[in-house]
Length: 150
Image 1 (cartoon, rainbow, N blue to C red):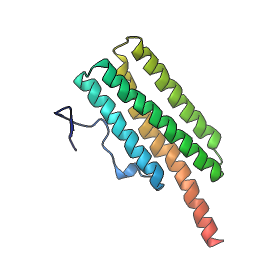
Image 2: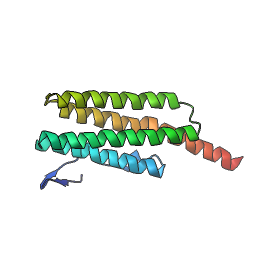
Image 3: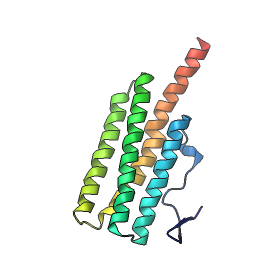
């Protein structure tokens, strides 16, 4: 497992990137790598007990980047007539609302929230990439195969 240097301290990542996370859409594979990196930064900051404002900044970047990624993904799905777009949007909405709720709790002084956030993010993100995102990648692959054979 790789170690990362964070603020001069070596820390094991919460999630190590794996090729099993690749869905075959380069743009979104890069987005997912960045989201995993931000998740690991959040975890590292929590473990190291960095000042509240620094952890809040990392969490804010994670929230903003996730929102950007979701919008990009949804636009792409619309362009490709993905049949279960509505379900995918519901998953994204749940993630954003839950993250916002956790961020609000943290800003109000609940110091146990960062660990709740990183555990939620890890579980949700990995499950979402491996299942829901892999599903739309398979749909696109099937569409491209049908188009090339037709």
